Image 1 (cartoon, one colour):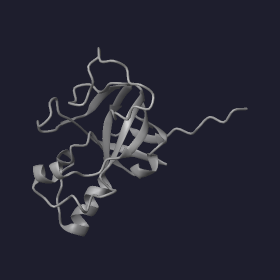
Image 2 (cartoon, helix red, strand yellow; image 1 turned 45 degrees about the horizontal axis):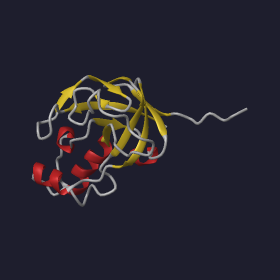
Image 3 (cartoon, rainbow, N blue to C red; image 1 turned 120 degrees about the vertical axis):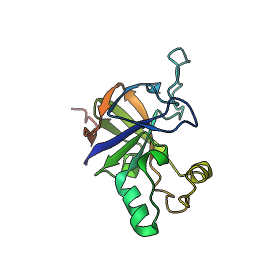
Image 4 (cartoon, rainbow, N blue to C red; image 1 turned 90 degrees about the horizontal axis):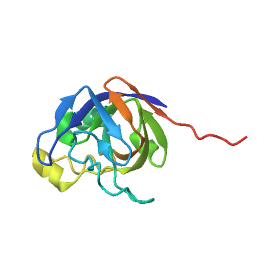
Length: 160
């Protein structure tokens, strides 16, 4: 399994428009630096099992299918997801570790569409995006991710 990062989007504060960037730094336990969901550096560490995702992703193919199947044009930044991917089924990454450029992440859960997003964009996207709204992920190892970099599953190490 191998895909690519097609776009990166962040917003400094909740409610602000997402802006396009060509690269972003992510830190384990915090999130993407400069994004509204990034936790402060002095925040208490997450406890094992905490399900606070650090970033969100959506497939470019889903946005294309939305247009082709439902006639709904949804720009990547309108999804409010941080990364747009191509060539990888994000739902297959739930519970798996994957490399995202210089980051190592773990897929946490499907990022279902919400009524808030539908109201914000003013388009009937809720139903067509059910189970295809993207992926929430946790950063396990920090680094930088850039547009065009690969997305690859990290294979589990088998003990000798």
